[in-house]
Amino acid sequence: MDSTEKTIRAIQMYNPEIEYIVYNDFSKDETLEKLNTLSAELNFKLINLADFIQSPSPNYDWVLRDAQKRALESNRHLIIVESDVFVRDDSIRKMLTFVDENDKVGMVGAITVDDDGEVCFPYLKFKNEKKELIDTHRSLSFCCTLLSYPFLKTYSFEELDASKDWYDTSISKESLKAGFKNFVLRYVQVVHHAHGSRPWKLLKYTNPLKYYWQKLIRNRDRI
Image 1 (tube, rainbow, N blue to C red):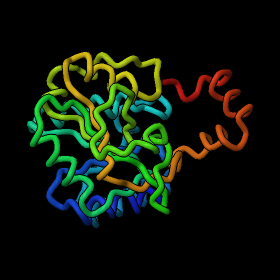
Image 2: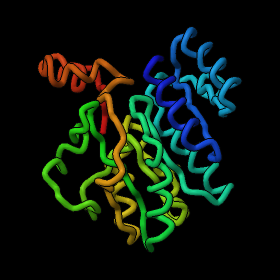
Image 3: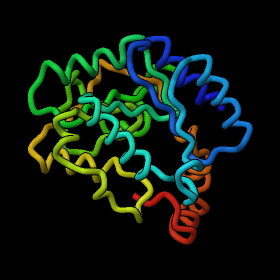
Image 4: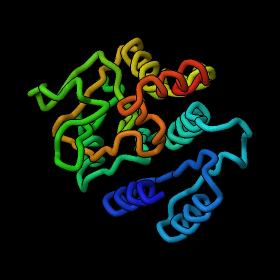
């Protein structure tokens, strides 16, 4: 919850004019209580998934469908910021400026860095890339990513595969398939505490055997 609160406060501090929605995917009761308090203080909309569905977390497909519907109804881009990501004062503004000044942009991702400013997961693949603007066919992470309104109009998230847990890769491919371009902006940095929202995934680095046992045997982390 400490990480989530930091994420929320950063977005609200730097972007008070945006419509901001927080999705609570079956967190503990004390987390929901804290989110309700923050919602009243910071004036964001809180959607508690338990009020709508009963399927256990993660329910990223439901969140994405709901968020896309809201974006389309308001004729806006959709920006996803996950709860272990901390935006800087100009992160969202620069992403919005880029997509509004360029044609056929499907998705735009801010590059992720650690507390020391070094490129970190999931964009280690671009660590040695010198270009400030990376036009890529590789999948974008949803850590901090803008999905453009024109792209949202072409692909319905109702078609998302409910057997998966995460959709970064599949939606990135759909953007390219629809004729859009996807970009990672090196000049737009956000701090990422990798897997802060789902600490069990850190086992991938500390205990790979246990991680892959959970992934394969318990059918977790389906991409």
